[in-house]
Length: 167
Image 1: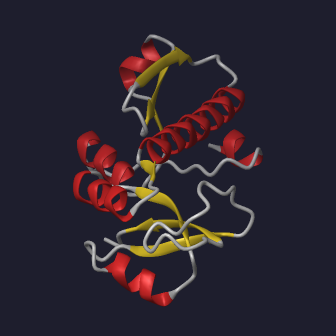
Image 2: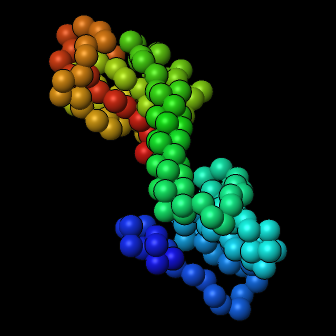
């Protein structure tokens, strides 16, 4: 614990009388990304068990391992893996629409976001909002133009908008 704290890694020892299952569940609920388990059997075998919250994978390493480096690398890996999964999920749930019919079809069949051009007229935004409560979520200042016309009325479009439903 002291080695981890000395190197800026938040750590604590749960030495309560609660059962291991309760302690593990509590760590999960509290969002602790890495749990180090050291029991009598582990010590007898000169091993340490490290549990990753993101994959629920348990890793076993030698007790002689440089724990600070091991945990630092593992935390970086967890951060990168979670970020990559989030970007992949966002991208798989982001669509492009060129007509109001495209938007309606996407909104009725897919969760996620829709990139579409907008003329800036409130009437068009209100009409789009009638489709399952879809709203403009973000107007991209320097967004690449995906069409020349408004997704709703067909007039010249001036804004690249990300549309979506608020849940």
